[in-house]
Image (cartoon, rainbow, N blue to C red; front, top):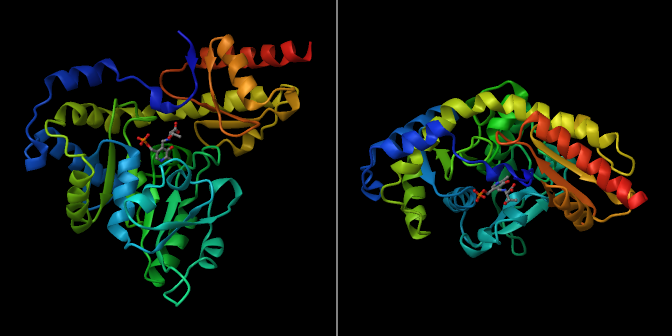
Length: 346
Ligand code: TLP
């Protein structure tokens, strides 16, 4: 079996999750009659500190619905230039919500109110008005970086004063919570909606939660149906989600320690550039330009040595730690990196 560091999306359900799935009490969730889904939604809302939550099949659908709930066609969505909603969601904000992105560059994916406020547009004969501000926390392509609570609060206060809602792509907000030592409900306290994934670091087989006001979630439920996300006896999946919510956050500290181990080990390899201080959570993005290989060649060389990774740019490679990779496997992966670099140098 290869050591799979491509993403935390590759995690497999635990034995406890599989047992709960087999035994789950189910009903038709489109009629809101699935007791397990109802329990998961109530629990997710409590964890996020919101009135209500909606179980959706994926993070992309959660973000798509979150954007649609807040915006009208012909508006702009302010987001970081490397955000997932802009770069990895097949232009759904335009396809489904009729909005365009107003990308704002940021250091490592951490936005600030100062950077955002300059980009806010009001109705005018020439401009599309800002309909929404989006924050990704932790930030995937920023290298798993975490936006501190005070910064999130400041963005929300400024946005709300300007009459603009805020959506958080919290696909990995539990990783942010672990890093900050702060509950998810505090991180998301001021955002209008937050989406988080059960299927990444938390290890559930599928599903994400969108959380917000009861009114927003009622609308979100209709949008989910429009998108084909009414899943009927979804309690089978929700049962795993409930375990993911209660049990899995405890394991994230170990994933972060493994990411640090990788970052420090990579920094010590000639030709690889990474600053371990910038690795906040479970994502390790590093530059391989000094190795004589581009990212594709580096990824291929690692694959030959039994380690799976992903290229995130012409010269950048991503490792993501998760509950299905051990510290020992991270050490083996580092050895594979060193060996691949030595082989090219020779
Ligand atoms: N991220 C995936 C890929 O799509 C890049 C990964 O391997 O990291 N928001 C963020 C910040 C994400 O990183 C992802 C998935 C999503 C949303 C979408 O979640 P899914 O895959 O459940 O639709």
